[in-house]
Structures are given as C-alpha cells and as structure tokens.
Length: 305
View 1 (cartoon, rainbow, N blue to C red):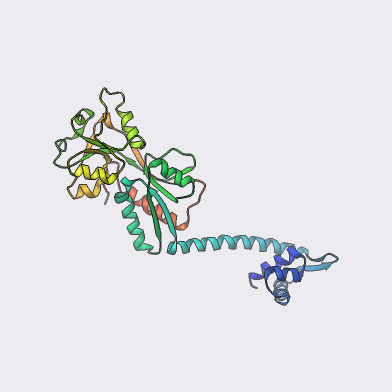
View 2 (cartoon, rainbow, N blue to C red):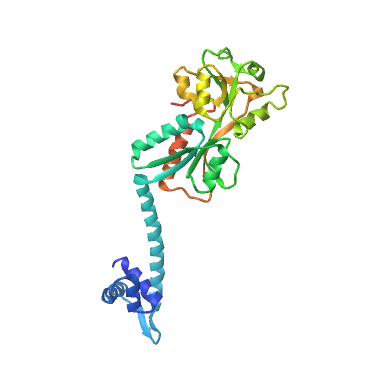
C-alpha cells in the first residue's frame, strides 16, 4: 500500500466523484481506481459505496479516512522537520548585536559554527539595545545579543551572562595601577562615553545622580571602535565590560580596572528571540553555540578556558 493512496481516498471523499477527484489530484481515473482497490484489498473492506448523490464513504471508509487525515498531518510535520535540517546546510540566520559583543562572544561562536556548518549564512547587524528588541519583535532578526536588553514581554530569554563594567584604559595611564577607580578619581581625566540614547549611559548617570559630582565625557560617541582607539592612545577612559576588550587586553594594548561601589552598574548580556517566532533548526544551533560561549565567561570577563 502506497501512502499516496490516502490522498486519493481523501480526494474522492471531498469531491464525491472518481472523475472529479482524478482531476483535482492530477491523475487518471484509472490510476486512482487502482489505488483505491489496493486500499480495499489491504483492509479487506469496501471503503466506498454509490448512492443517488454519487460516491460516499462506508463506515470502514470513515475509519480509514481518520487515519489518512492523521497521517497527512504527521507527514506535514515530518516534512517541515526535514526541511529544517536542510537549513543547517543552507540556512540564513539574522542576528542583531551590540558592538561590544562582536569580537568577544559572537566571533568565537560564528567561527566554530562556520567550521561545523559551512553552508550556513549569517546576517549580522550592529544595533543599540532598543533596536535589537524592535528587530526581533518585527521579525527582521532571529536572534538578538545585547547588554541592557529592553524589558519587552514579546521577547524570550535564551541565555544570560552577568556583566560588570570596568574602567578601560591604556596600560600607561596614571590610573592603571589602581585597585579600584572611584568617581572622584575620574574627575581629572578625559572620559569617552555614548550619549543618553544608549542604556549604558543612562545607567551610569543614574549611578552618580546622588553624588555632588557628575560624568562629563570629553568624547561622546556610540562607536565602539572609536572608543577603543581613544583608550589605546591614552586619550580617554572607557566604561566597558572587560570581556568586550579581551583581545586588546591580551595584547597588552589596554587594561581593565575595577570600578568602585559608586560606579557599579551591574547588568547582563542577554541572548534573545521573539516569543511569537519559533527558531528554525539553524537558528537553534546558532543560539546554542552563542550560549556556550557566554557560559565560558564570568562577570569579571574571565574565560573558563
């Protein structure tokens, strides 16, 4: 018995006619009749009977029809799962990320994925935390990776990593030898920070609000690359998670000094997806690999391996 026979059975039941079912399915009436005969031989029962209105299902035919409909639904699900697996060979995953996560978290994950699934394609766009959330909700991205993630009910958390910001500066900076850095320590040194459109700037402004002092950055920019360059040249102190500067710290181009209690803004790095949009097989694999990298970093920015 061929599974296709179930489609013929349904076609006859829906049209009430051998000729009508054959036209609908796109086969000859003879081929359709032969398949129904095979079904009846298999079940040892008549599945159709004729009356004044045409052909209708017998009681046995009704029972077989229930199975046919269930098999059809299960085949659709199976076909989708197989297509999903094909996506691991040729799928595209859209990701929105904050720039500080690129080299430290995303690049290790993507390079490992590219080795294992060379057919996958990755569309990566840098965005602020609010725009990451908007892209996910609007269906323009599969995954989002950002610090200070927006608190939206439409988003689902896939993975979370605690984050503590540090003072990032050149190793030759006068404050590089400090155990910790306070707000008072910073008053005589140029800072580089993004503007208040960024959640990180708002968080630091709130942290020092009760103090008589304030943060007055000389350089105001949302460009991660520009901030890093200013710090390496000894022109500014940055407020960034140490893990985001891992490469520069390991090369001896930058160093991270812990911030004092008056400048603490603990947050987290969140891997997100839209609650209404199930992840494809390809996106699930990417999500899992990014989560593995996140799990290997502690809040201070140290790698487990």
